[in-house]
Length: 196
Ligand SMILES: Cc1cc2nc3c(=O)[nH]c(=O)nc-3n(C[C@H](O)[C@H](O)[C@H](O)COP(=O)(O)O)c2cc1C
Image (cartoon, rainbow, N blue to C red; front, side, top):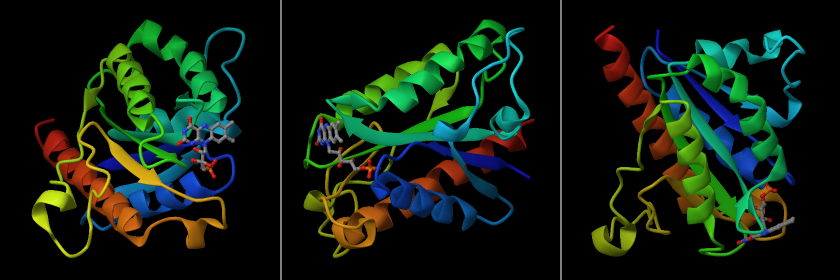
């Protein structure tokens, strides 16, 4: 059974809500097991460079979707710490050929989220993972009535939130786009693991 893990950080709950919708979309694909890992709760590597058991879910994943808020135009420091903690995995290339994808939530419509996605995709490239894009034409072209991919992102999922409570200050269209994104990665994981 293909395993999709959404590895996220969220300072104030908005990105967490989006992560939950990404997981919902992934889990909607028959035969796929999808789960959430809050990377801020992962202990760092042991002194001998082995990884605590909390990392096992990531090791076992066929696809990992990384997501975090954009803070000061880039990934949150918790995500950066996670990436540096994962440098021992880079040494062995243990995540090579897993699928990867990324999402960024921020306060601005742009807010430099693309930089965050690029940071995540470079991390995935360093791990020799295979990057999956959004694959949804922006609603400004499709007039789909649902406003899917209203922020017109191809490199990864972009969502925007205000300063209120997550449910009230995230856009329903972004939450739907998050589900479509999770579904796309999960479908890719089904195809990817078939050849094994
Ligand atoms: C330290 C800090 C830096 C931020 N920098 C940006 C930024 O560069 N661009 C932007 O659009 N929003 C920025 N914001 C707003 C956050 O992106 C937004 O509140 C966040 O995505 C909410 O997600 P969260 O609840 O998961 O933390 C910043 C917020 C904080 C706290």
